[in-house]
Structure formats: structure tokens, C-alpha cells
Image 1 (spheres, each protein chain N blue to C red):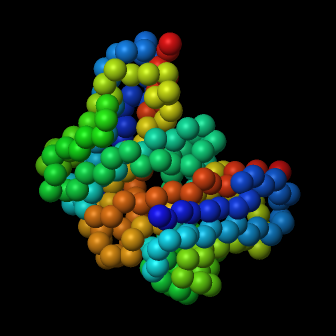
Image 2: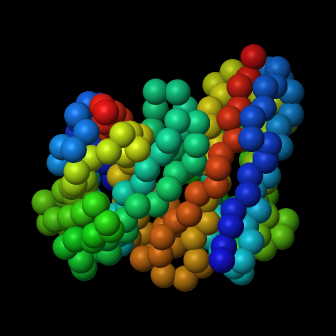
Image 3: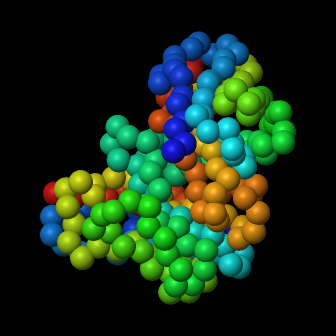
Length: 114
Length: 114
């Protein structure tokens, strides 16, 4: 059974810092890995999707990497801003018989101090 | 473009009462549809998924049920709510073919059972 772990559970940084969020998964037989952002009381916003054949994806100040063989992904946020404050969730889709559902980590709660 | 709607946004229900949450998707056809629950202090858990009208698969044994009466409509129901049903319910859709596609989430329904 796939298990996804995110470290740290919470992070507080001053504005302008570069930071890295970590995600690990136990079963490397994945289709893809997604990073989401969740604001308090809101739904999930997809940030980046990395296919199993890819090593990284970039969108603006965000860069996500994937090392499938070691079961790890990182989300790099450059020049953090107070508006980046949210919970960041990592999730994977496993190779299985059509379910294609996401298995989520428990998230990293990020606070960027102005 | 595609959009996903959920209602109600917030619901407070007594223990033992029935439940009906609705999710609709616009701008796509034959999507895969998912219900997830986010309980307080816990990660997102897949409850149900559907690959087509009338096709529902349950992931977790519970007193909840799901139905898909139309291609782009997904309903989560219960005959008698339990306190443990409280949580944030998220509906998601994904293009119906290809495990590499992104999942998109609705705004969620916050359910409090008293």
C-alpha cells in the first residue's frame, strides 16, 4: 500500500527566503506526482504535475523535482512571499487497474512572515 | 474551460440525519470523478471514484454511498450521519483517459455533524 510522507509538517520563514519542501513515497510504481496548494477552508489548487518519466517541472518561482527510484520529490519555492502562506500537499497516482486516484501526504503548513 | 462545482459550501447536521452533497463538472465529458474527505488532523482520504454513469467504486467501508446519475454529476449520500462523518469533502475530476492527467478539485463542502 502506497504511503506518502511530507517533511516538515510546518515551516515558518521570513519573506524572501528560498525554501524546500520534501515528499517521500514508499511505492515507486507511480504514474505521476502532483503538488497542490490548499488555503485555509478552501479546495486544492494544482501547482505542478510531474510524470513518472520526468525529472522536474517549473512554474514561475516553483520548481518540483522527482527521483522515482528513491521515492522522493522536492518542491522548491524561490524568493518566498507572504502570499505563499498555505498548506502544500504532495500526492501520487499509482499504477493500478483504472482507479487513478491520488494518495496524499499530510502536508506542510508554510507561513511566510512579512 | 472546465469548472467544477460543489454545494452546499457548508452544512451543519444532527447525528442520524440524512446527507446529500452534490458535485457537477462543466466543460468536459466522460470524466473520472472522485470523492475525498479531509478530517481534522488527518490527510485526504479517497472515499469513492467513478469511471462512468452508474459505475461507483468504494474505497473505505462506511455509512456513506455515492451515485453518478449523469455523466458530469456525482452525489455523496448518507442515510444516517455519524459524528465521525464530520470533515471537509472534496470532489475532483480527471480526464477519462490516461493515468498521467491532472486531477482538479472543487471548492469543497465543510460538514459538521453535531
